[in-house]
Length: 165
Length: 462
Image 1 (cartoon, rainbow over the protein chains, first blue to last red):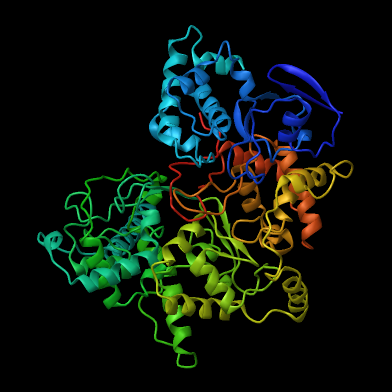
Image 2: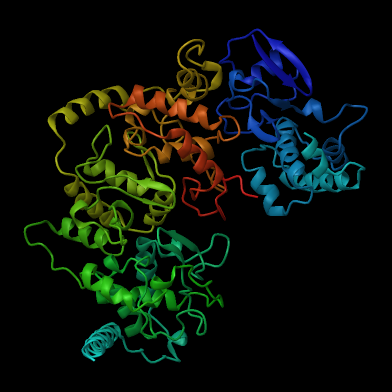
């Protein structure tokens, strides 16, 4: 048994401790936001956030995650109440096929927690490990800038959220 | 009275000695050449200079990543303090725009700037002194036709006595063996060409030869392994730890392509070197390989025997098949902690069937795991290999957010025990902690050598 905390909820997982987190999220917890892309840690579609940092869930065995705070895209908001990143991606229609988008958003989430006003260069740097085959990068970049604005405008500034987490 | 006379005598001797030393250390100023920056050069000469500048890897030290090329200002940490590279663009005020060719040639040969000041040996004139006058002319033509950039390098951060540049004349007297070398008639043309390139502009020894306490290369341990920018530069003499000894073809392939199936991918500062060597013709790459291979000597029969087994096991006949985490080979339950981490997090790529340069290197082939110092594996585990911009490149995810210092230490201890016959590494937890915190500085670069990382990208800096 491995205990995992995902989006604030504790779970007891009955799986081989070597199992990559991605499979546990999708198959045990029905959190299907994180996607299986390459399985090699090269495409970024499986990105989730662990203790505030973007990591590739297809590469991470769950035995390394006990006692740590895992956030997936489902933790950023709901359909009725989308979080600022989700709202910005909807507003700017940043998804084409959408397969890479949860990974993009989680990399962006890790970045914006640290810095709600990243420069263009900082955004690109944070997303170097996320590939998009449709080529919607310009909209994705715009949505991340917009999300930063929404976070700043919100009552709880992004920087404080970062500290709270 | 007598004591006073003795004191005066001693003072006089010191004074004369100091005066003699200053005279010895003094170098004349080469007059400013006000027309130098406007000079025109034959395009062929400039093109040749571009190749030579790539061989010299000039851009690596003389450029701050993300800033204009050759404008200097890059901080070079040394055991003695921080030295900042100079602006070598043809700007008259802050660069070498006022330098005549004679001044440039003197800098390369003797390590003295146009004004007559001694340069610190961070500028590897121990090697550049071997460069021919023709090649210096081409280099000069190339640099003087770059875009002039006004950029003043920050002042060096060195303790007092070392700020006094005339002292460097003493250093040179002890360690600088200046001037070109005669070709060795007992060796082939390729070998002689290779020695000229590797020992001269290529300055391989600047990283791959260990240095003595005053920062000069230890000639008795030529190519015996050194360090650069937080990375171990492996021994490339008889002490090489490569499980499959390098042969000439493998070495040439590696220098040409930045990877080899039996040796892995170049990374850290070597990635820049192999990136830059792309500008050189195949014949020069082959010549460097011939020369360096000759320094490595013939492997022992035991090494050869082991290498034959490894070659057979790893020769490129495996099916091109993607390894991925769905084919995670073994369960990680049980065993020591390092083993469990290795099997769960590393083995799926590093024991997968995906070939170099995009698959993980099997550690049976790894020089790093056999090296006396584990720094390169520490660096790669923590910071990974970042992807190159806009092209396919070898990548590895960084594990710094997933493994704590103890876990990295456990992992490395396991790998050392399993994949190497060398003794265990000591102090792994502390070494990992120092690297993670940035106390020990590491330049992290993509494997294609584009110097994109503006600072120690991996460190948790405030």
